[in-house]
Length: 336
Image 1: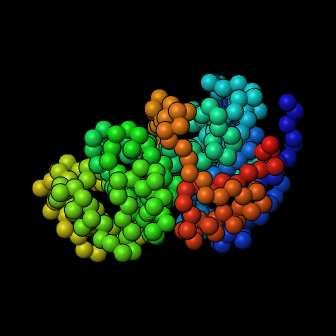
Image 2: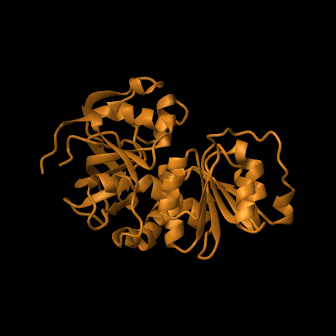
Image 3: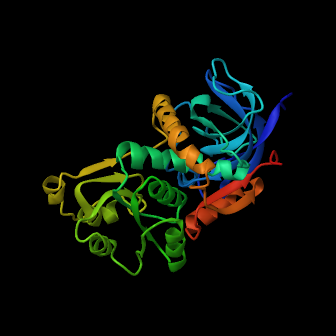
């Protein structure tokens, strides 16, 4: 397959609003050792993209400055030493940047074949959320069969993924969400109880639902504003996994005594700064456990909207408005 000299990509000349993103032309990315070149058919929009667009989440050294952290498409070139894939393979991948483009270079160790029966849109909705949930809920927090989990932001891409994986692997799931419609959607995905945080106090509901025990794991993307109630919602030996700070980074007042008396674990992580070896280990865990669930239809991405590439700004606005349930995906001109 002969490759073009130039590609279309979404440029961000300066940080700011969604309107700052513009279609542009530029050279194809250069492959580093171990990379594969993907002819992108679809790319997911994620909250870190919005933060980077605003100037609040700069790419790490060596990463592409182009937005976009997950892609799906066809392998069209192999970098030196890249293993596991051949030209023509259909893959989805966690990108270190560069996803909002017709071609993206990604480490082969962060790529996965499309689950059987999947198309580009469904495949592009997988990497960022599945890597994040697997790393934080199962690897770090160690959620086990028979345990309970509270997932904040249950209707988000992360939330809908976490609900399904936790339920499929034998956990009991509680979630918070911001509307009746979102709560219904979460319960339809397998949550035992969805708590509308605008009308109810999640700590009170969790303690009532668990007979005063609390939950074993909390997946939190709110941060400071929820910290005190999160600590109060955990059972003995409970684990709080923080992945974002949508409610701020500061805790004004909190009773931290339960951290000692209940032997609680408070942890946090960001996906993008993880090493290549760490991301490969997450990829391997997904292939072994999550991919069979996807192929069996026991878990599936929830997709809120599919937009053409040139409407990526609308996708960012949807993300910021917060009314979506599940993932927002854009398709490139390479999509069939």
